[in-house]
Amino acid sequence: MIENAHSRELLYVAYNFPPFIGAGVARTEQNSQALLKYGWQPTLLVATAENSETVDRKYAQIGIKVLRASSVIDESKVRCLPRGTGTEKESFSTKLKRAFAQWVLVPERQVLWKLPAQRLAIRTSRQHNWKCVFGTCPPLTAGWIGMNIANRLKLPFVLELRDIISENYEGGPPTEIHRDIVRKIERMVVHSASKIITVSPGIKSWVMNRHKIESRMIEVILSGYDPKDKERFDALPTIRNNRFTMIYAGAFYRHRKPDTLLRAVKNLIDRGLVPTKKLRVVFVSNLMPSVISQYQLDDVVETVAMIPREKVLQLYANSDLLLLICDKCNYQNVTIPGKIFEYIMTEKPILGLLGLDSITAQIMKELNNSVIVDAEDVEGVTQQLFLLYKRWEDGKVIKLGKEILNKFNCYEMVKKLAMVFGEVCNGNN
Image (cartoon, rainbow, N blue to C red; front, side, top):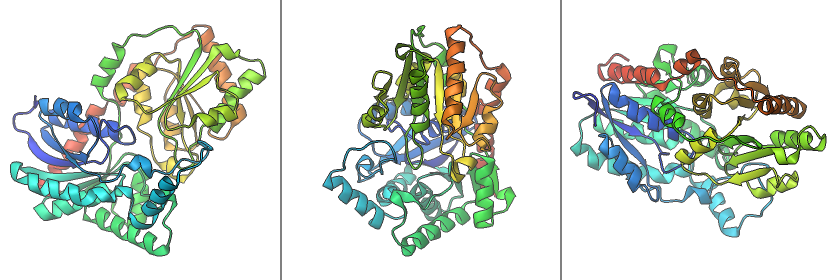
């Protein structure tokens, strides 16, 4: 049910959406639903996914139409394997698809979604009265699509950047010509926006420096967590574990690897600090089991393929520690993984492996029940894991203060987003 009878319509372009699992999914879910509260009725333009009928019906019931355009290619077949996640050899077919993606698909593999998505939106526009177009990146193609649709329909365009735009797609542009094309598309999309939304101050600075954009054109709106998710999470059944259970949920890609954490767990066992039978680590990710075997931790660590968010929340509810594993590199220092807000929602202790000067580290320093360690400091992680294990063993539970929970409630943040849409539609950009 639409919460505001006088809602204005907008087109929301986002490649990833349930039942997809991955970066940006939770933010799109939260934004699209919360916008109803603030007088905006989004139409979602997303990629086709198998078994999406249940999701689409759920959104239709609350007044949000989901348009699914064919992405043509199964991206799981061309996605680069992250470094350090396995030793299995690729098939010839996978190598061929990867080469095709690197040399032909510019600016990234999702570009095959572009024409079907634009055609579907233009065809459907006759049934709607959209007031603006909102495109969220990555992938850059989603912003490109949003820009083109806005131009065709003569509507204002708002661009969201959840990450810096990397030119290292599919292993990196194979030639300088490829790199120039990506930069040209990026400049075109960024400069066409009436307003730019970034999810962190660091990304705002990156956009200003890279594209000479004035500060007033960019609004920082953090992700936060959905209070409805919080209610559902608090109602989940929980158990008392007989093993100290750690959960990591998320993909490993680029330079993000689990090696520091695995070495630290191995230290706890080899030094006799914690019995093997008292430790359990669960990776809900794209991690290959062969990585676990390399560290001889098959009795401690298990891998679970990406699963629906509801099941991930149940794992959180029955965990003793949530793991936030980040890259220690420039882009990670300016971005904030949306996962941290989902973790904060649970009120569970968090162990953050990241750059100590990163924006994410600054957020974690506000959490009274969590700790941060340099992402490459194996000894530091070993020590913190032992301390957190002892806290668990002694039955000590430290919960977050209410002020922290209130601070990262997404509804206030989506309110700012709704105000931006109102401004651009009124020409105040």
